[in-house]
Length: 346
Image 1: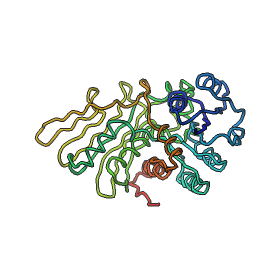
Image 2: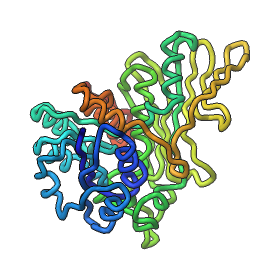
Image 3: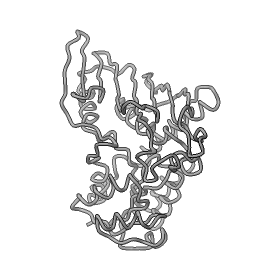
Image 4: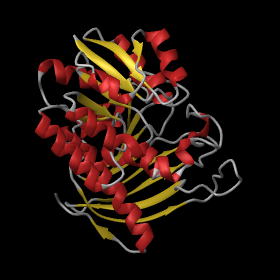
């Protein structure tokens, strides 16, 4: 039985981590810590476990085998590093860090501690993405030539535990990055996994276009990004992240292949539609993707617990998280410098 602690008790813990741990028979939640004790208490009352008075108290509890780090972005790396040093396996929410240096330190600390570090990238676990990967591996679609992948919705201010324009998502000190860290990093992880190749060069426009904070000022972090990515094999495509898709959420990916076009989560009725060169369409009826309005099991918690129980490194490791983070950091650098950026190999 894996005994778990949850650090940060906002919306992602409330809707994903706590309920998914509670549903997994191989683990038990021992307790919670949040800067706002009321939030931790609400989870304890619903899912069981105690409320820790401090982060240090939780990390010092030798009964706890693993933790979820579900804080605002700026604290992901320092808390994960402290947890690893205290002998805990760590599941860290995305983005794993806000700098390449911190991401490297997290990976190095996990290795030194002999503990697992997993990053909460759930897109590759969505049913249609798994099926799409199988189709690609079969050769049916041929070679991927270009792509477009998008993740956008109306913004985090109604999803965050601090609902409204004062949300931490809009604050540079706590969030560091905006839509790119919230949504873009998910698609960065997904696209490199789907095309089975690393992104080598990026060119991007990353801006704050419309979102305003509670003072009526344009937010300090990005609310939109349009990025061009190029892989080592020469596959090119676009990645878009937005908090200003005010009509409806778009979480789609389109792969333009030598044998046809594969549309994933682009059709509300059929999660995958593959159109062959001769215009014949194949419809795949597989599971829906999660949305903020419609929560469903992500698979992240089960994968994390299973890796601990089986003593097998998690698929979505710190290294995988870092590969996605480098794309995001490269795009932000590109926007700042107004030029394309070649990503360094580690």
